[in-house]
Image (cartoon, rainbow, N blue to C red; front, side):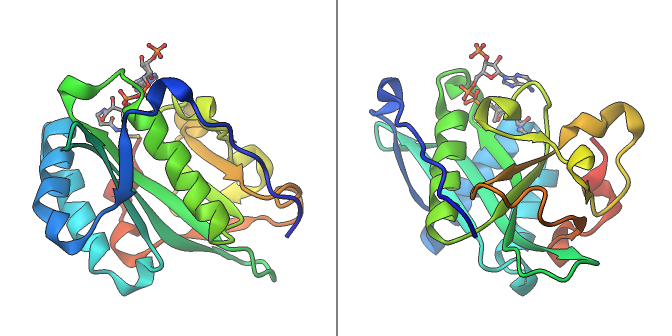
Length: 193
Ligand SMILES: CC(C)(COP(=O)(O)OP(=O)(O)OC[C@H]1O[C@@H](n2cnc3c(N)ncnc32)[C@H](O)[C@@H]1OP(=O)(O)O)[C@@H](O)C(=O)NCCC(=O)NCCS
Protein backbone atom coordinates (compact mmCIF):
# COMPACT_ATOMS: atom_id res chain seq x y z
CA UNK A 1 0.00 0.00 0.00
CA UNK A 2 2.74 2.49 -0.91
CA UNK A 3 6.41 2.96 -0.25
CA UNK A 4 8.15 1.26 2.66
CA UNK A 5 9.52 3.62 5.30
CA UNK A 6 13.14 2.98 6.22
CA UNK A 7 14.31 2.55 9.80
CA UNK A 8 17.79 3.34 11.09
CA UNK A 9 19.56 1.06 13.54
CA UNK A 10 20.78 2.75 16.70
CA UNK A 11 24.36 1.61 17.37
CA UNK A 12 24.24 2.56 21.06
CA UNK A 13 21.61 -0.10 21.66
CA UNK A 14 23.21 -2.97 19.77
CA UNK A 15 24.13 -4.95 22.90
CA UNK A 16 20.50 -5.56 23.68
CA UNK A 17 18.79 -8.56 22.19
CA UNK A 18 15.18 -8.74 21.11
CA UNK A 19 13.23 -11.81 20.15
CA UNK A 20 9.65 -12.99 19.96
CA UNK A 21 8.30 -14.25 23.28
CA UNK A 22 7.43 -17.93 23.37
CA UNK A 23 4.98 -19.83 25.53
CA UNK A 24 7.76 -20.78 27.95
CA UNK A 25 8.43 -17.05 28.51
CA UNK A 26 4.94 -16.34 29.86
CA UNK A 27 5.88 -16.04 33.56
CA UNK A 28 8.82 -13.77 32.70
CA UNK A 29 6.59 -11.57 30.55
CA UNK A 30 3.96 -11.24 33.29
CA UNK A 31 6.63 -10.45 35.91
CA UNK A 32 8.01 -7.61 33.78
CA UNK A 33 4.50 -6.20 33.37
CA UNK A 34 3.83 -6.40 37.13
CA UNK A 35 7.12 -4.84 38.19
CA UNK A 36 7.09 -2.10 35.55
CA UNK A 37 3.56 -0.93 36.31
CA UNK A 38 3.57 -1.77 40.03
CA UNK A 39 0.20 -3.53 39.89
CA UNK A 40 -1.45 -6.50 38.14
CA UNK A 41 -3.78 -4.87 35.62
CA UNK A 42 -1.40 -4.91 32.63
CA UNK A 43 -0.12 -8.40 33.42
CA UNK A 44 -3.72 -9.65 33.48
CA UNK A 45 -4.43 -7.84 30.21
CA UNK A 46 -1.39 -9.40 28.53
CA UNK A 47 -2.34 -12.89 29.69
CA UNK A 48 -5.89 -12.40 28.41
CA UNK A 49 -4.73 -11.00 25.06
CA UNK A 50 -2.29 -13.85 24.45
CA UNK A 51 -5.27 -16.24 24.50
CA UNK A 52 -7.69 -13.94 22.67
CA UNK A 53 -8.26 -15.18 19.12
CA UNK A 54 -9.53 -11.73 18.04
CA UNK A 55 -6.07 -10.31 18.96
CA UNK A 56 -4.30 -12.39 16.33
CA UNK A 57 -1.99 -12.03 14.60
CA UNK A 58 -0.15 -10.59 17.57
CA UNK A 59 3.52 -9.76 18.14
CA UNK A 60 4.90 -10.28 21.62
CA UNK A 61 8.56 -9.24 21.91
CA UNK A 62 11.02 -9.56 24.78
CA UNK A 63 14.19 -7.53 25.29
CA UNK A 64 17.18 -9.18 26.97
CA UNK A 65 20.14 -7.60 28.70
CA UNK A 66 22.95 -10.07 29.41
CA UNK A 67 20.48 -12.92 29.08
CA UNK A 68 17.95 -11.40 31.49
CA UNK A 69 14.48 -10.50 30.20
CA UNK A 70 14.08 -6.80 31.00
CA UNK A 71 11.37 -5.47 28.70
CA UNK A 72 8.23 -6.56 26.90
CA UNK A 73 5.99 -5.11 24.20
CA UNK A 74 2.75 -6.43 22.77
CA UNK A 75 1.07 -5.53 19.48
CA UNK A 76 -2.40 -6.97 18.83
CA UNK A 77 -4.55 -6.98 15.75
CA UNK A 78 -7.32 -4.42 15.29
CA UNK A 79 -9.48 -3.17 12.45
CA UNK A 80 -11.13 0.01 11.20
CA UNK A 81 -14.90 0.16 11.47
CA UNK A 82 -17.07 2.14 9.14
CA UNK A 83 -14.75 2.35 6.17
CA UNK A 84 -14.50 0.22 3.11
CA UNK A 85 -10.83 -0.56 3.04
CA UNK A 86 -8.51 -3.42 3.73
CA UNK A 87 -5.98 -1.53 5.88
CA UNK A 88 -4.09 -3.85 8.20
CA UNK A 89 -3.99 -2.42 11.71
CA UNK A 90 -2.14 -3.15 14.93
CA UNK A 91 -2.39 -1.72 18.43
CA UNK A 92 0.58 -1.28 20.77
CA UNK A 93 -0.36 -2.16 24.37
CA UNK A 94 1.27 -2.53 26.75
CA UNK A 95 4.98 -1.62 26.80
CA UNK A 96 6.91 -2.38 29.99
CA UNK A 97 10.54 -2.17 31.09
CA UNK A 98 11.84 -3.33 34.48
CA UNK A 99 12.43 -0.28 36.73
CA UNK A 100 16.20 -0.94 37.02
CA UNK A 101 16.54 -0.99 33.23
CA UNK A 102 14.49 2.07 32.34
CA UNK A 103 16.02 5.09 30.57
CA UNK A 104 18.58 2.87 28.84
CA UNK A 105 16.86 2.66 25.49
CA UNK A 106 15.09 -0.66 26.07
CA UNK A 107 11.58 0.72 25.47
CA UNK A 108 12.68 2.53 22.32
CA UNK A 109 14.41 -0.55 20.96
CA UNK A 110 11.30 -2.67 21.59
CA UNK A 111 9.13 -0.14 19.75
CA UNK A 112 11.54 0.06 16.79
CA UNK A 113 11.89 -3.68 16.60
CA UNK A 114 8.12 -4.16 16.76
CA UNK A 115 7.51 -1.58 14.04
CA UNK A 116 10.05 -3.31 11.81
CA UNK A 117 8.37 -6.63 12.45
CA UNK A 118 4.95 -5.20 11.62
CA UNK A 119 6.29 -3.50 8.49
CA UNK A 120 7.68 -6.83 7.30
CA UNK A 121 4.27 -8.39 7.98
CA UNK A 122 2.58 -5.77 5.78
CA UNK A 123 0.76 -3.92 8.58
CA UNK A 124 -0.33 -0.44 7.46
CA UNK A 125 -1.09 1.44 10.68
CA UNK A 126 -0.08 1.13 14.34
CA UNK A 127 -2.06 2.81 17.13
CA UNK A 128 -1.17 3.48 20.76
CA UNK A 129 -2.82 5.14 23.75
CA UNK A 130 0.13 6.36 25.75
CA UNK A 131 2.38 9.16 26.90
CA UNK A 132 2.32 11.97 24.31
CA UNK A 133 5.84 12.97 25.44
CA UNK A 134 7.26 9.54 24.67
CA UNK A 135 5.75 7.85 21.61
CA UNK A 136 6.23 10.79 19.16
CA UNK A 137 9.99 10.06 19.48
CA UNK A 138 9.25 6.89 17.55
CA UNK A 139 7.08 8.39 14.85
CA UNK A 140 3.64 8.43 16.44
CA UNK A 141 1.37 11.46 16.07
CA UNK A 142 -2.09 12.37 17.34
CA UNK A 143 -4.61 10.03 15.70
CA UNK A 144 -7.85 11.94 16.26
CA UNK A 145 -6.73 14.79 14.02
CA UNK A 146 -5.99 12.24 11.27
CA UNK A 147 -9.54 10.90 11.34
CA UNK A 148 -9.10 7.90 13.63
CA UNK A 149 -11.49 7.44 16.52
CA UNK A 150 -10.44 5.38 19.56
CA UNK A 151 -12.52 2.36 20.65
CA UNK A 152 -13.77 4.43 23.61
CA UNK A 153 -13.94 8.24 23.77
CA UNK A 154 -10.70 9.85 24.99
CA UNK A 155 -11.29 12.96 27.16
CA UNK A 156 -10.41 16.17 25.32
CA UNK A 157 -7.55 16.98 27.71
CA UNK A 158 -5.88 13.65 26.83
CA UNK A 159 -6.67 13.71 23.10
CA UNK A 160 -2.94 13.71 22.17
CA UNK A 161 -2.43 10.41 24.00
CA UNK A 162 -4.30 8.59 21.22
CA UNK A 163 -1.67 8.24 18.50
CA UNK A 164 -1.06 6.59 15.15
CA UNK A 165 1.85 5.83 12.87
CA UNK A 166 1.77 4.72 9.25
CA UNK A 167 4.24 2.05 8.22
CA UNK A 168 3.66 2.68 4.53
CA UNK A 169 3.64 6.15 3.05
CA UNK A 170 0.23 7.41 2.02
CA UNK A 171 -1.95 5.25 4.25
CA UNK A 172 -2.86 8.17 6.53
CA UNK A 173 -5.17 10.33 4.48
CA UNK A 174 -6.47 7.41 2.46
CA UNK A 175 -8.32 5.66 5.32
CA UNK A 176 -10.16 6.78 8.45
CA UNK A 177 -12.71 5.49 10.95
CA UNK A 178 -13.16 4.04 14.41
CA UNK A 179 -10.66 1.49 15.64
CA UNK A 180 -12.12 -1.81 16.82
CA UNK A 181 -9.60 -3.56 19.04
CA UNK A 182 -9.30 -7.14 20.27
CA UNK A 183 -12.10 -8.30 22.59
CA UNK A 184 -9.95 -8.36 25.74
CA UNK A 185 -8.86 -4.76 25.14
CA UNK A 186 -12.36 -3.65 24.25
CA UNK A 187 -13.31 -2.58 27.78
CA UNK A 188 -13.60 1.02 29.01
CA UNK A 189 -11.07 0.53 31.82
CA UNK A 190 -8.30 0.06 29.25
CA UNK A 191 -9.09 3.39 27.58
CA UNK A 192 -8.73 5.78 30.48
CA UNK A 193 -5.43 7.57 30.02
C1 LIG B 1 7.55 4.06 29.62
C2 LIG B 1 8.65 3.00 29.55
C3 LIG B 1 8.18 1.81 28.77
C4 LIG B 1 9.86 3.63 28.82
O1 LIG B 1 10.85 2.63 28.68
P1 LIG B 1 12.41 3.03 28.76
O2 LIG B 1 13.19 1.84 28.38
O3 LIG B 1 12.68 3.64 30.07
O4 LIG B 1 12.46 4.14 27.63
P2 LIG B 1 13.70 4.60 26.77
O5 LIG B 1 14.97 4.30 27.51
O6 LIG B 1 13.56 4.08 25.40
O7 LIG B 1 13.46 6.16 26.72
C5 LIG B 1 13.72 6.90 27.86
C6 LIG B 1 13.31 8.34 27.63
O8 LIG B 1 11.87 8.38 27.59
C7 LIG B 1 11.42 9.27 28.59
N1 LIG B 1 10.19 8.79 29.15
C8 LIG B 1 9.98 7.64 29.84
N2 LIG B 1 8.70 7.59 30.25
C9 LIG B 1 8.11 8.71 29.80
C10 LIG B 1 6.80 9.25 29.91
N3 LIG B 1 5.87 8.61 30.59
N4 LIG B 1 6.53 10.42 29.30
C11 LIG B 1 7.48 11.09 28.63
N5 LIG B 1 8.76 10.65 28.51
C12 LIG B 1 9.05 9.48 29.09
C13 LIG B 1 12.52 9.27 29.64
O9 LIG B 1 12.47 10.44 30.43
C14 LIG B 1 13.76 9.22 28.77
O10 LIG B 1 14.04 10.51 28.26
P3 LIG B 1 15.53 10.96 27.88
O11 LIG B 1 15.98 10.06 26.76
O12 LIG B 1 15.34 12.37 27.45
O13 LIG B 1 16.32 10.77 29.13
C15 LIG B 1 9.12 2.57 30.96
O14 LIG B 1 9.47 3.72 31.69
C16 LIG B 1 8.07 1.78 31.74
O15 LIG B 1 8.01 0.56 31.65
N6 LIG B 1 7.25 2.51 32.52
C17 LIG B 1 6.22 1.87 33.34
C18 LIG B 1 5.13 1.28 32.48
C19 LIG B 1 4.55 2.30 31.50
O16 LIG B 1 4.20 3.42 31.87
N7 LIG B 1 4.44 1.86 30.22
C20 LIG B 1 3.97 2.70 29.13
C21 LIG B 1 2.51 2.61 28.99
S1 LIG B 1 1.96 3.70 27.70
